[in-house]
Length: 354
Image (cartoon, rainbow, N blue to C red; front, side):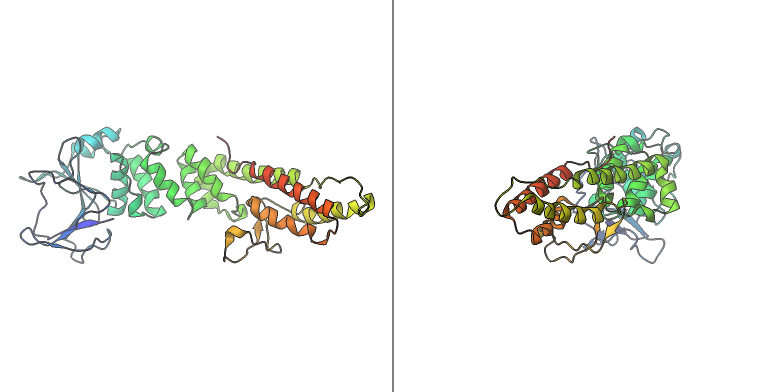
């Protein structure tokens, strides 16, 4: 999060006219009221050693005009970050008058009223962006910061379900965390019963080892979402078994391949698939199968997760069956069956259904 530095001797006050606000590329000013210099933005938390120094959040400066109104309230975070806010916008987003704080506030003659909150600037930044309907994804808040912000939003009477609906900024923020912290993000949205997000994020957990879920994570997501995650893995495993165990069909007898030799392909298929399927559990990986699909490029090979295996990886696993098959007709039937498996596996759901 970016900010403006203020000299401890300078009390912030709104300007007479609005100069607009740019939430993605703010200008940061450091110095006293009579002297300013432009410098590179810095995140909240890197405030000066002097505890009396104040910083202004770049996304909420004194010039921020909302509904043709300038800020009429200053919200001060625990680390002395100042947010210039609009009382009417906060009151509209809160069902409890911002925890009853809008009825209070510190007043000083000639200055805007201020509210001092116990939360840090990073958390308040996410809270206010959510209440205003602004995106804060470009600030890259951590999962821990977002989790704290959700608790604070509830505390201040903001309906998380409304603001986390599809296409809302909070929805996009939580989705942006899923590729990096999938199980923790899933547990967080499960805790707050954010159904749409849980459905989408479950698709990131197909290769996750469910046996590593801690008691804390299980408690956070709750029994409903924990069960649905296990059922998703089990349903994909059952679907894979039903798809892959059917052997390739036999072709008509030819001079070079009689029915007795047809059994070579059937046995080769059974051997490859039985070892792959029958010992499988939803989270089990098979490090002995080192496939290298084209899309992996120069990345190292890795053990395959049964539930999370991709169609291309599954094809790469089955293709070597034909290496020891001499009959061209048998090889053709094998490739046809592999293509059927890939298509069928591609159609199996990759997330649980609402």
